[in-house]
Amino acid sequence: MTSTHAFWLAGRQATGEDTFDVTSPWDGRLVGKAAVPTDAQIEEAVAAAHAVREDFAATPAHLRAAALDHVSRRLTERTEEIAQLISAENGKPIKWARGEVGRAVSVFRFAAEEARRFNGGEAQRLDTDAGGQGRLALTRRFPKGVVLGIAPFNFPLNLCAHKIAPAIAAGAPIILKPAPATPLSGLIIGELLAETDLPAGSWSILPVPNDRMPALVQDERLPVISFTGSENVGYAIMDSVPRKHCTLELGGNGAAVVLGDYASDEDLDWAATRIATFSNYQGGQSCISVQRVIADASVYDRLLPRVVAAVEAQVTGDPGDDKTDVGPLVSEDAARRVEAWVKEAVEAGATLLTGGDRDGASYAPTVLTDVPADTTISCEEVFGPVLTVQKVDGEAEAFAAVNSSKYGLQAGVFTHDLQVAFRAHRALEVGGVVIGDVPSYRADQMPYGGAKQSGVGREGVRFAMEDYTYERVLVLTGLAL
Image (cartoon, rainbow, N blue to C red; front, side):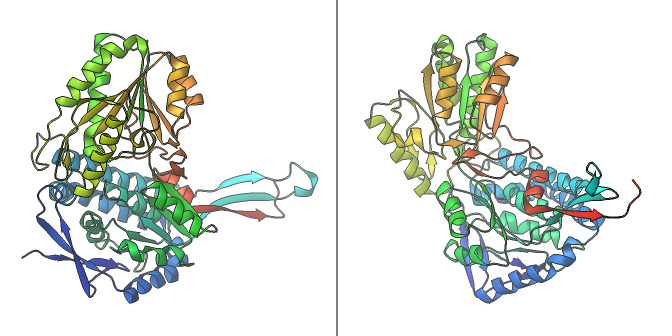
């Protein structure tokens, strides 16, 4: 009999009146049942977080840091168990699931470190003008209030960690809503937080159905919203609560640029391998997966067959197999959408070089060339294992092609030229530029977020903490400076 996973209400386990099934996108088996909170229980969680906000902000840094360190250690101890759960509910190949647990371990460790050094204060003397003689300003950061964290399905553990850990480190209570398709991994964080001495009410993890999310978004007791997900939903949230602080990490259309100086066989083999791997890892369900390859004409003809061969070498199949590189998408509907977009592109004149086949929720790693610029797959985030390759003439045309997208999350530029690297940093309208690698590289401590329609604000532990807090200045008078 499959067990029901309780949710976490103000730091304690609870069940509601209903449950919903969590099934594997690979084989449809029942992974578990998640308890659904009632409206009264949601109200209890919000009220508890609101009531504890001042006390939690005043908790000693060592207490919050110790709790975060504890979660980091316990995630390490339970790595294989949690990885198996991620793979089961998400369809992620087990090797990538283990990597996700490792990243969450780091996120909580980074948060513990930041809790100890954040908010130390900055002193500014004010006697630079006569009116400020004897005065000193001390600036510190304080939480804006309770955080509502809304996490997506594609990294069901680590992106929950990126909401919860910075909030606790900053002393801000948090209510986390995991994705309905993959709530079980996030609920495990609750098991580990419950082993700590954090105050009751300072955190809740509630698998609230999407149709009940607007009430939480509108609640005035939740002044900070941190959302990761689609562009349409993210901006709908922001538009509905214009006076709240919203951090939005939205979609991408990740481009990997291969310039003419990246021309040796070794260079092109490396670029092709990285492009193939990171256009297909997580089934392409990453905001910074490689969706577009923009290759200089001088290397295009040598790069393209390498990319196709590397994509065809990706091992597809059972996500529980250690050898599998590419598993299913999160649902059959998601795979059907990708199938439709590829079909539209081919009918519009694109050339299909490999892939293009769907089997249930699985979609074969796919490479397209000659894709018309006005097709959906060119303009939108495919969120599937599909790669388009285009030829350009020189650096300026390559950078213009990157910037032609409405999205601007990250870009990768394969070049050995340091001057080009700095020009890319200046010219590309994205939140992050990765030199010598694909746009899919992310270190969890670095600032992460986008430009244009890819969102507002930044994640990465310290940067999220800054988003969750505001500066407050204290002026001291009558000092002998």
